Image (cartoon, rainbow, N blue to C red; front, side, top):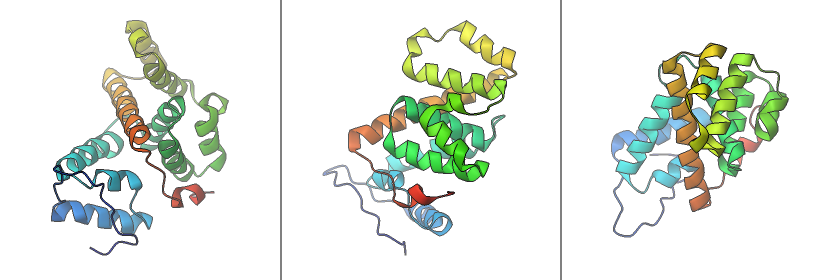
Length: 191
């Protein structure tokens, strides 16, 4: 495997499970497409099972079939990460919003305060739901889901909004727990 930077696996005594060839190829493709391997993937590279679980869930939620666009999913990731003050995800997914939207201003608005961005009422409802699910999950109930329906989302899409928000809440907490820092390359992307 020839990566621009070597993969530095976490030292996890007694828990190491080397990546298989397919997983190593996954990292090579990331390096080829991005020019680097995201630190989040390196953080999971110490254990093939955990790496597989993380990448499968991420790929399904962020790239798989959905009524949500890839940009909408990235925006949900940023809103959740903003609510959690997750430096890693704000940097990485803020860069993705800038790139996908071809709008650096939108990327910055999303990172700082999504409410300042010009959004459709439908998208605003989804982002408000993701934010509320993050900061006050115990208060989410049927009127919140109905607000999404009234804005034009169907139940399958509401599931996807909730799943993306939930995944990034988990990812934000792992980033905080492990002091995961964003790759330097994210800071200059799509500016």
